[in-house]
Amino acid sequence: MVRGFTIVIALALVAVSPARVFAKPRVAVTPIRGDKEAADAIGDAIADSARIIASSQVSEAMDQLGLSGDLEQGDVVRLQTKLRASVVVQGKVAKDGPKRTLSGTVSVRGKKSAKFTITYKKAGSEKFKQEIRDELVKRIADAEDLADDKPEKKKDKDKDKRDKDKKVADADEGPKMMKRVPAKKEPVAEAPPPKKKKKVATKAEPDDPPKKKKKKKVAEPGEGEGDGDGDGEGEGTTIAAVEVDTDTTPRNPVLTPAARFDIGASGGVRQLTYEGTGAMRPPRVGTGGGGAHFEGELYPFAFSDPKAPAAGLGLAFDFDKTVGLSILAPGTNTSVPVDQGRWSIGARYRFNVAPTTLLALGAAYAKRHYLIQRGGPALDAPDVDYSSINPNVWLRTALAPQVTLYLRAGGMLIFDTGGIQKSDSMGAATVLGFGGEAGLDIALAPRFALRISGDYNQIDLSFKGTNGQAMTRGVTAATDRQFGAAATVGVMY
Image (cartoon, rainbow, N blue to C red; front, top):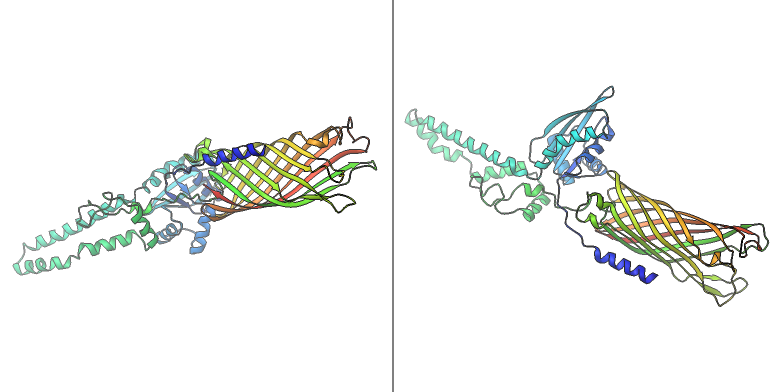
C-alpha cells in the first residue's frame, strides 16, 4: 500500500512544470471613504484585466508613507513607487437615501489622472461591477504602454522651438541692429537639447533607482522614445518598459499556489477509552510519540491560466509516520513496538469567496492504523486499521501579506476498522468519525513557507453485542482520539 502511495507522489512531482504567466498592470485601490465594501468590489470587477494589490498591503504602505484622504499627484507617485504599482484608484462615496455616488480618480503612471462617477445601490452588485469595468479597464489597459504620452511632450517642445524661430524671423523685419542681436544670441538662448531632455525625463520618471535597473532589463531596441535627435524615432529606451510588471509573485505567495509540497516533523497522542458497566472492560490505551510528515497539493490547470474555472481543480495527499513508538506491557518492564501511521489522497476544488479568502471542497481516500507487534507479552489492546472516505471543507484567509490562516473540518465515512471488530475482539460496531485542523502559513521567501498546524480526530464505535467480547465484558462503546501537531517547510510554484 505504501509503495503504491509513493508511486502516486512521484508521478505528481514529475507532473509539476511551472509555466510563465503573462504580466498584467499592478493596480492599487486605496480605501474608499463612505463605503468599506467598494474597494474590494472594484478589485473583483477588474481582476481579469489587472493584478490587484491586496487592500491590507495598500493600507500598510499608506500608513508607512503617512498618507490618507484625497491623495495629491505627488502622493500618488510615492504610493506607486512604494507598491510598484502602475495604477492607483481612489475615491469617496456620497449617500442620498438608498442611492450612493462614487466619485473616483484613476492615476496611471506617466499620464494625467482621469475622474469618473458611478451611481449605485450596492457595491457588490453585478451592475456596479460592470460600470466599474466600463470606466477602468480601458484606462488600465493604457498602463501597459505608458510611452504613448511621451511623443506628445516632444512635439510640444518642437513647437516651442518653432515659435521661438518665428519670433526671430519677425525680428528680421525690423532695423538691422535689432535683427542681428537676437540672431546671434538665439542659439545661445536655446539650451542644448540633451539637457532639456534630461529635465523632461526626470519629471516623467521620479527618483527611483530600482525602476531604472528594471528598465535596462526589459527595454527593447526600436520601441523607445528616440535617440535624442528630436525626431521621435530611434533606439531609445521606453518608459513603458519601466512600468510593465514582470514580477509574477502572487500578492499572497502562500494563498493560491499551483503546486506545493511540505516536509517536516510531527508529534501526537493517541487515546482509546471504553464505556460500559462490566468489570472486565479493557484498560485505557494511551501512547504518544514523534515522527515524519509529508503533504502536498497540485493544481495542474493553474499553471496555464490561474483565472480559468479548471484552475481550481486539484489533487491533495498527506503521509504521517510515527517513529519509535512502543507501549509498556502491564506488570512488566517490556516495551512492545507499535506501528502507527496514516495517509490519504484525494481531489479538491478551490475558489475565491473574497480577494484574500479561499474556500475549497473535496474528498479523500484515507487510511489510519495502530498495530501492536504480537508474539511477546500479552496486551489487552486491540489493533485498528481504519479505511474511510473523508469529505472535507477548507478555508484559507490572508491575515497579512505574508501570513495565511487555514482551517479544515470534515467527516470520516469508515467502512473498515481492522482487528477491533473481529469476533476474537470487541465484535461488530457502528462507526462514525470526524476531524479538524488549524494552522498558519508564513512566507519565508517567494517560493518557501513555514507551516505550523494542529489537528484533532475522533472515531466513535458503538458495539452491537451480536458477536465478539463486547457483550461478555460489558463494553457498549469505545472512543479513539488522536491529537497531533506538525511543523513543515514547503516549496511552492
